Amino acid sequence: MNIHCYLTLVLLLLHEGVPTHTADGECGFVGDCETLVLAFTITPSLAECIIYGSLVSGCNFVSWNRITGTCLAYPGCEELDPTHTDVVSSSVDCPVCHVPGLCLANLVDQVLVDSEAECMEKCSQEPLCLWSTYLQLDDQLCILFEDCPSLQLCENCYSSTKSCSSSDRSGKELLYVDGRSGNVTLVSLDGSGPNRELPAYPGSSHYPAAVNYMEALDAVVACGGHDLADSTKCWTFNGLIWSPLPDMSQPHCMYDSPSLNLEQGWWWVTGRALMEDGLCSYDVWTSEIFKGDEWVPCPQHPVGSSSHYPCIVQLNATHSLYAGGDSTLDQTWLYDWSSQTWTESGRLNQGRRDHSCVVLEEGVLAVGGWNVEFLHSVELFDPVQGIWIPYTASIPENIDPSNPILFLWEGTVIALFDGEDKVYRLQEDGIWSALEGVLLPEVFQGADVDKATLVPLTFKAGF
Image 1 (spheres, rainbow, N blue to C red):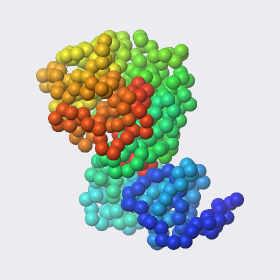
Image 2 (cartoon, rainbow, N blue to C red; image 1 turned 45 degrees about the vertical axis):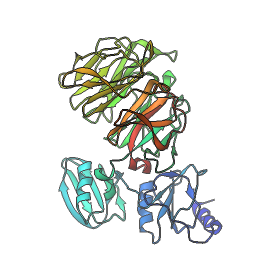
Image 3 (cartoon, rainbow, N blue to C red; image 1 turned 180 degrees about the vertical axis):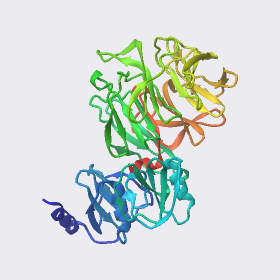
Image 4 (cartoon, rainbow, N blue to C red; image 1 turned 135 degrees about the vertical axis):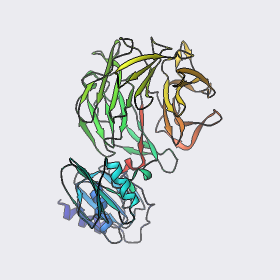
């Protein structure tokens, strides 16, 4: 059946009536709307489907089929049919961010900028601007528009709506990856909406070694797998589609490969190597950086060997911190990226492995772990004095403190703890409490199995 016959049939089958308009900003929902079709076309992306829908009189919602490119415009979307897994639906009020192309519209202004983020910010400050196009040429040009009824493809140019400005993208949600199945879920941390299933991790043996969100790419990056053949495979994920990246040069351990974003906008993946038998090496340490288009060698282990389950964080613009892990249980090292050297710093009060760290304004918080027995204690690294200080925020005794995942969210520390399906928040009084109305898609199996990263609120639109 050709597309026109299909759409005619859809129009005949759909019931008449006034559908309910869903709330503004409902973006990137998997499934098709079951309501009256106002108009249709073919578009290469959901972003351009939203642009099309915004120009159709009475349209408030669109559905886009990522296989056929069919874009359906609806007056609203009372109910989604989630069985249509190839279809993504969105409000026409959803932000359209970093979509390839130049707006063909009424010009407001054009200025030189240093980055795409600055271009978006220029649009947010201009009352007449509703769209911006960023041209990454020898001189980075920002063009502001009143609207954007259509896009023209051009090299190194990207367009965004006003709502993509950094001030409107400060909120974060949790992208959760089930290591065993590869299933990916977007978890709303403010409890304002249900969890959303996203396309699964494409690694054939699942168990990604490292997952992170790279702001420079405005996408999630993920690498590795249970089998040695998958251990160097990498992908980028924009919320809708997983796309292959250049292979890593080293086979990273699926259980023990900490990673972090560097100040330069790069991604550092390190940790133990995966061996041919599917186990992780106790002797071979891996370390490399992804610069957005290639992998390059990175700092080796500070004592020249390997360790198991340490924590590594970006302390500030110039230094990364490495702490704990077998057999360097209480050691802390700082890596200076300008001099490319490791320097030992103050020792942990309790030697730790299987712990996690997060950077606060006052220093680095080390939480939980194991050393002969479970460690429920927490301590803070003071970078000025170079010492670790006991911290009054012990993990409750009924919670497994090994292999947690920590994030800084809305100015406070949140944590995923092994064996729990809740997300915990560290209160000012030092008590850990569950975020109200927030549930993980499953019981968290620890950072050595399941992975998670924070993504911007607009990520679920998949642009």
